[in-house]
Length: 119
Image 1: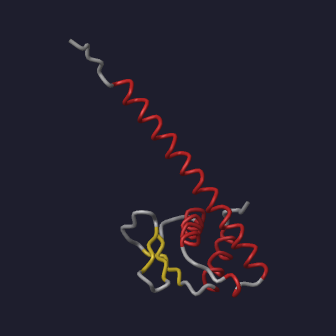
Image 2: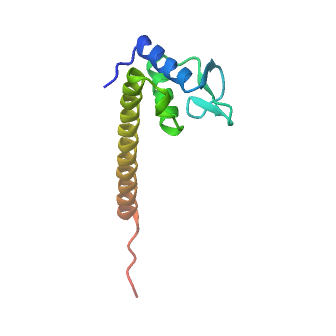
Image 3: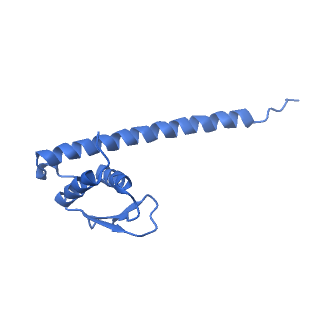
């Protein structure tokens, strides 16, 4: 598991530098806390986020972009593997939450559906 510290943030930023992504911390109206500039390998992250939120945004971005693992050294590969495991765990967790929420909504609808007597 990774620690959400400024030191870890620096390591993740260095990893992005290695895969030729530019990270910019800017102010903006972001839906998810970050945006990817179209096909320019620039990630813009909300500058008001703390280290943990920045790392989470970078993990999400890393999980959605293609990375040439051959260009990474052993330490960077290890960090990349850790970050992708965190991303996959979060994705699986959000899928389970979605299924649970859908089931709860269906149950609520079933309880509130009026029953009408047939003539």
